[in-house]
Structure formats: structure tokens, C-alpha cells
Length: 195
Image (tube, rainbow, N blue to C red; front, top):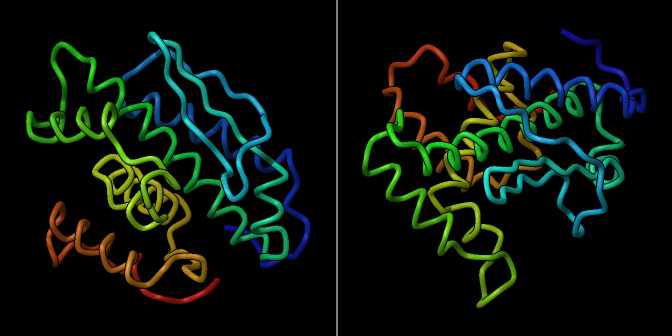
């Protein structure tokens, strides 16, 4: 889709990807209420954040954090991580909408797990919660898999996994197999290689 270029991924590229992903996900999820998209200064290491309050939804992003984490990566890598992160946050939008839905699309078990995670989930850095502990929670694991799979499918390639802990990548792959089966044609997206 894109040539391997360095240092040319601009804020307008990031915003374009974010808006395209949001609109695509809204259509796919069957929702019309678009979350507000705002730039904000987020905590160190955090690029994007979904928030909900009384049926008001927002996605905050920190362009400077993104550039700090991926600015020296190829254009293709920056494109993938922008897309995967936006899809991850839109999956949180879907999860929250499902928690409050009168007739959810997901199973009762999944909704119960998400509801418990949403209201009682671990907070990174509190009570010894590590990054891995945080991302192993039901909502985060689901959103990570969704974002990863979304970007890989949209760009028709496996993702540069140099920033993903291989143990966690194995967890994502296992979750993918649990959902889609071990013979699924898209299992290739978990091939460990760099773009």
C-alpha cells in the first residue's frame, strides 16, 4: 500500500487514518453516534485514549507521543500503528455501547466480562498493575486483537511486531485461534517479522 519511507508520516496522515477508521468502524458496528476526536496531552507512553461519560464518547490522541514512539520508524510502520491504535479505541467504543445495549450483539458471558472489566478493571500503575496485567484484561485483550487484525486486514500484511512483547503476541494469536480456528486463512498476520 505504501512505500517504505522514513520521517514523512505527518499529522495530516495520522488524522486521516484516525477519521477513516472511526467512520469505517461506526458503519461496521451499526452505530451512528460519532465519538468526539480531540488532541490532548496524554500520560507518557499513551498515544490514544477512549473515554465515555453518560453516553458522550471521545477519543483523545497525543500526536507528540505517537511521534516519540514511532517517529523514527518507516512510513508503513507508522501507518500500521496509527490504524491499529485507532481501531483498538473504536473497539472500546463498541464494547461500552454493547455493555449498555438493551439487546447486545455479543454473548451474555462476553458482556458480563466486559461489564466487570469496565467498572472494576485494573488501572495501570495502581496496586502493582503492570503493562502486561493491564493488557490481559478482557476488554484490552479484545481491543488489542481487534486493532491488530483490523490493521493487518486493511493493509493486507502482517504487522511489524518489534514493539509487541512476543509473549503477548502469543496470547493474541491464541485468542485469534480460539475465535476463528487454527485453520483460518488470516493466521498469517501473526508471522513475526518487521516491515
